[in-house]
Image (cartoon, rainbow, N blue to C red; front, side, top):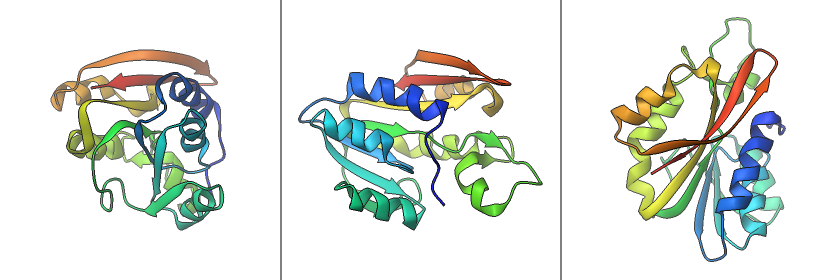
Length: 172
């Protein structure tokens, strides 16, 4: 089962199309349907897609994108100009089945996976590299995590959907 693009994916894709450029090394973590990897590749970037889900890895390979199975940075080597992350960012729901939890749930409070990412991301960024990250009001106060791990950040876009607001941030 692969996460199909939703509002968060399209909001992030808009920013990927603005920022990913020819000659850039781009890492799409949690690639899922590959929407971000494909947008970066279409702009001429050299893209590595990574996902914990083997189905997503196989899909990326089938679409001509270099791809590896990795739990966040566990198998990622090297540094990148742009790291893209559309993580699972919703708080855990007891009734949700295990398969969908993989791509919706970011931990008990929703932000735990993002925190794991932030702890390691700087080691994989080139000197002037940046991160594009999506999350929602349901994730909790993610800006506090940005401060905790000493990231410069700015909100690039947002969209209200149903019972939440989705954000795309740039981090350096």
